[in-house]
Length: 113
Image (cartoon, rainbow, N blue to C red; front, side, top):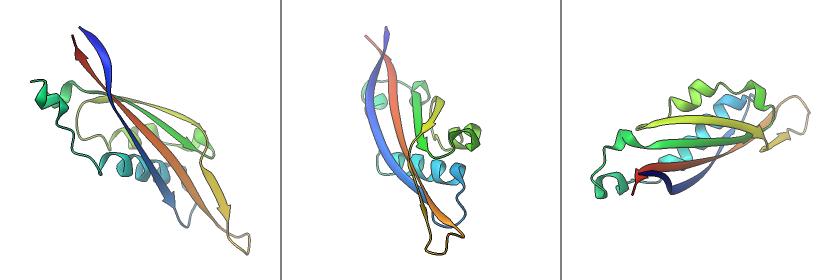
């Protein structure tokens, strides 16, 4: 058997006020996951917890993202998180705050023949 990518989910999340990269990253992954109901594991007669999920987050200041908080979003399976430079930071008019945007992908792998 070989791990094969079965699904690629994509999402976007923001922290409107506060510029917290972890908050935006968590919201981005939730956006990617919560718009889907994956039945592929069941269709292949596999346990949903056999899924391996490779999460990639693009966000300003990637070193400030709490990867464990992002992984905690996954409802099934096990995962890894890679955080890369990306997203956007949009300052407010007064320059006193900003909106932070993160992007997420979740690639779902299953061990299939």
